[in-house]
Amino acid sequence: MEERNKHDEMAKALLEEKSLAALIYLIDHGRELEFIAGEHTYFISRDKAAKYVSIWKGEEEQSFDHVYDLIEHAEVEGEPFFKAWKKCEISTLF
Image 1 (cartoon, rainbow, N blue to C red):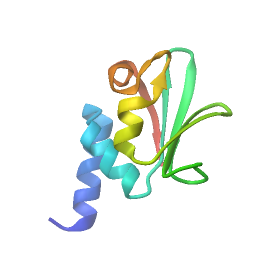
Image 2 (cartoon, rainbow, N blue to C red):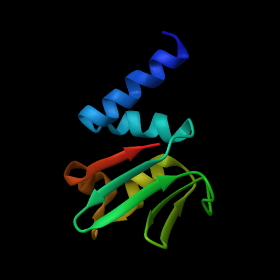
Image 3 (tube, rainbow, N blue to C red):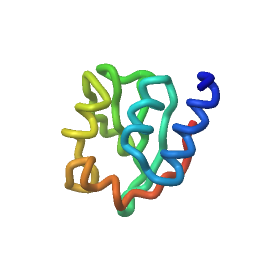
């Protein structure tokens, strides 16, 4: 599979199925994601992150050495990311 087609397939899997594997792939390849959880907007990016990758809620940053660590240890609306993710609404994949 060509690199571009793989990237497009991963984006589709993220947007349609909220695949965590697709999220990891896309963030590792430089994409950024904005999503809504509860009343708040969150943003995941490697750009300007204190470590490898960060998740922001407004000015509040949680930063991690790997995307896997973010999924396992970040908190979204008081829950671990991997549990809260099912309820999140994806706004924009940059």
